[in-house]
Image (cartoon, rainbow, N blue to C red; front, side, top):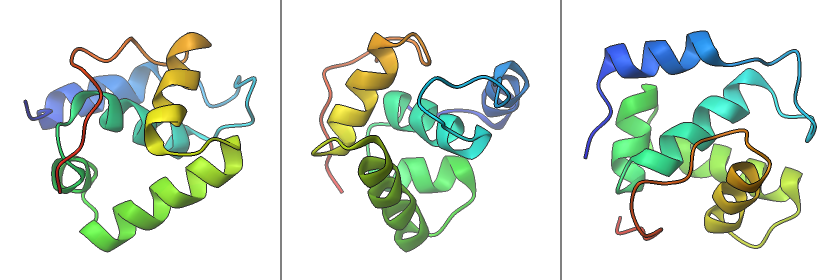
Length: 95
């Protein structure tokens, strides 16, 4: 499943960076949303217009910021707090 650019634009519009109980920026929320719907890190990078390396670095920074062990933990925490919808698939990554 790949996120379309119009879907991503819609996610950006719904983002509320002024309110984030975890001190997340709009970019952090955008990254979490992409992580929750894209099946691979390469797809996340493509959806956000980043290189794979930039995407991996942003994910690593986000994981550290949230104090979780992995991107899966970041997705689970954000979903539990209602910041992103529950992922539509079992959380797994290849690539």
